[in-house]
Length: 404
Image 1 (cartoon, rainbow, N blue to C red):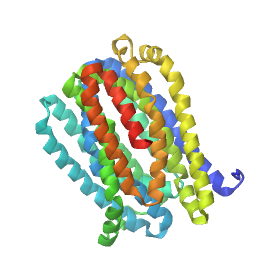
Image 2 (image 1 turned 90 degrees about the vertical axis):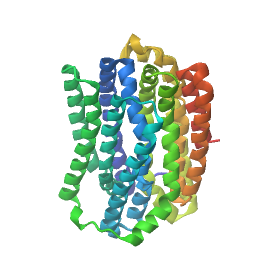
Image 3 (image 1 turned 90 degrees about the horizontal axis):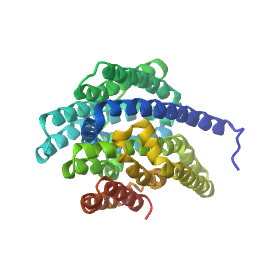
């Protein structure tokens, strides 16, 4: 039985409420602004912008180095090492961003991209460099004080949304919308830095330690490979659709996926907020630890099903109302892709269990199976069924990676 009056429950509930409230607001604002942008750009240009983002996403995992959850874990275990952990992680993530750029530069010659597409990719990729400042976010996750990060994210959301609307009003070209991705990253990093300096500590007190870096990289190595695999099976579909079909078809698919993946913040928010509680439960006993895990799994499944059922039947109406008749082919994709959420929700929760047990290598094994199956299924199904085939490929590969 959960003691709702306990200080611990109140702290985790308040933290989850902050995160959930922000994510819901962000989802609503980003959805309507994003729909407005998609309507303005049309399926072809919107597909091109989505392709550029997906292409960068294939390599963005190299920039994170699989350190996110590990840093939170170590900050919970040893909060007195904060400056050492944050400083070391910041330097490692900066090096990871350089590695990402090298990967993108090596891959570009093997594509059929024109100059405009490569410019879009370069602009979006430059924004990933600033993700090193996300170590500040991890500190507040460990301290269960996510409200500070929410403040920053709300400011970023407002600035980004206003600029996008202004660009539409100005009839701005496509490349300007790619620049918004870069601006978002800059605003977010500056905001996190300001909040940290005001409420927590001094960035110039952060320290680099080789020994800490070695330990972090040793634990994160399986997660780096796993993150690469995740990037492939979450982003490769749009890249393959562009190469096998057209930018317009990417636009249809991206419109549906944007609505389907809009819900993926739910498991991330819940698991990120209760992760410290699960780690602490393990210290107190196996029974409490597995009891909390089971409740988390049950909650994930029921939430995902509750989202997928109505969307399945309302997909044509939703697409028509939000995107207009030009995007109607996206309805079939949405009704299929939305069910992948069941396995995404489960995968996020089980990923935290693997991290707690220090079994990161199994994260890599399962996501590698998902990535390989997604590539093979796309090669088989996209020529036969178009973008619906890509949706089926995603659903099946997600189920393989997260469950089967």
